[in-house]
Amino acid sequence: MPINLPLKEMTLQEKLAVMELLWEDLVRTPDSIESPPWHRDVLEERGQRIAEGKSQFTDWEKAKLEIRNKLS
Image (cartoon, rainbow, N blue to C red):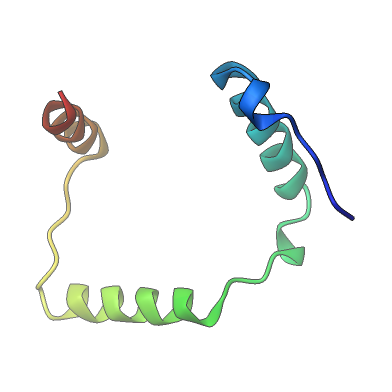
């Protein structure tokens, strides 16, 4: 089913509202969304790095602040 949205005519707020509606609909049935195989591979690799002590963790609030500082 082709979907035609007037994306070039929509404001940023309208586009974000559409994304929110789509997300709300998708999360109603999370079991119907199958993760691609590469997701498992990435998670296994990250788990291995944690087990080997090669990963560092940062507090979420601190991480957001660091990201904001890099972008400004």
